[in-house]
Image (tube, rainbow over all chains, first blue to last red; front, side, top):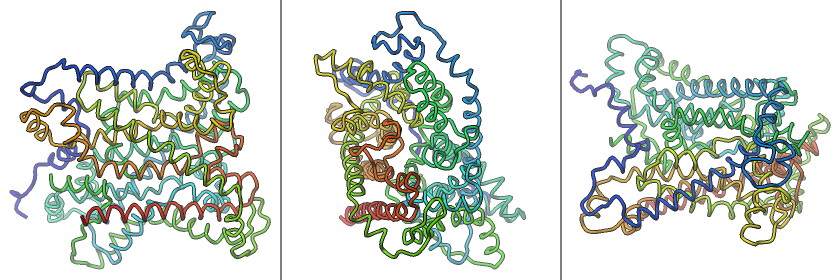
Length: 311
Length: 312
């Protein structure tokens, strides 16, 4: 337990960032190899194919944006131009935002997704720590049971879960929406593997100094695990924010709906108003696009590390 | 480094973990269960118990309205296995899985291979390919319903541009599944793209340097270095993709406006219809377990294949 065996505090983090992230511009940062030209024909061809693919992938969304800025008449005219005959207008956005419910749905989506993320992260990290560091009877078989449960598709459980929510009186409540989403066995697996890689010497030193398990977990393990916790959190949040089937089943009250479910009801109500429908789509997409632009690195890392559990 | 390399490998292969024997005190037992309790309570309430209760429900004629609930033995399973709509939904689901999996892997591989070349504009490529994955099913369904609109949609404008006959897309039973596949590839390929990109960037750059010194070009390097090392990643992506495709519901349901179509009804949609449209909870639970059996068979097949590969 001599302190000379201690690995520098940053080490586990750095290691993980190195192996589990997608290093930005690694190839470009690499020194030029002999004989490698900046403008080889193959490189130019690759660039052209890539650009065409990217345009193809952006087009549907750009069309939606263009339509959202048209008048209803222009949108329904079938004219493929980017700007409608009457010129660009924001009347579709005004119409959507003046209806009120969109704000409530956005708020419901935000707080339920945050609640799912926070609860999932807390209970998964605590359990993962126990599996990684503590010894107790039945540790191995319990872990096997939890790993095996990763294969259970949530869609298979909608009937018994709905029945259970009826019994708990949680139908048409946000807790009924949140609670069934917090069990994420795959995240326990991912976090346990991470905790396994954190050098135990740091904890043992703290334990010798009289720190309790909870204190060690809180002050040593969690701060060291920040990158993986962020990855898991982002991954869980995107899943909860976009979840459709369960919120669709459990919520009937319009004021309790999340964005995906609420928007679905509006389309059924006036499906022919294309500009408004596209304005809605753009508004609903905007928050996550902004989140992506800000947290691009962490999201890319989150998918690379947590992709195993996301389905 | 070794520990994290194992982590990555374990995530890819789902390998067994390392359990070192330690001294066990009763105090440590108590602390352990305290750490585990919150997760275990949620696990039992929202996963373990529903699985067990679902099996029970599948042997009853329980209705959503509260009526019924009597034990009916294997009647629900017998009905499910002879129900033509059940088989049709199963067929549609498998058909969708076959149609969507190939492009979702090939296109993702192509995207990742190109982005991995380190061409300028990295953030733009990632944004373009991955952004659709961030959108809710409702949003992508709205966009694609509009694109596939036979009168004013962009899809027919493109066909017209190439001098082709316009299609009815979602309205035509012969093309509606194809339309859903196109929308799905656009929507979710970015996820596989990122998994492939991560796998490619784990290949040590020294290998490329050595190959380059030996005079191997970019094309040769891709075939001889990159592709052979993507084996484990491809197995992982393939399995995740098959499992994800089999759960088809959200976009298919919403793109057809909630209308049940014989050519697009997936098995999850049939579970939903049996339970929440026909109110037959018992029957719906039985179909759920037929579907679950299919998933377990695929999971076991995958485990056997990976094990055989490891032994070789």
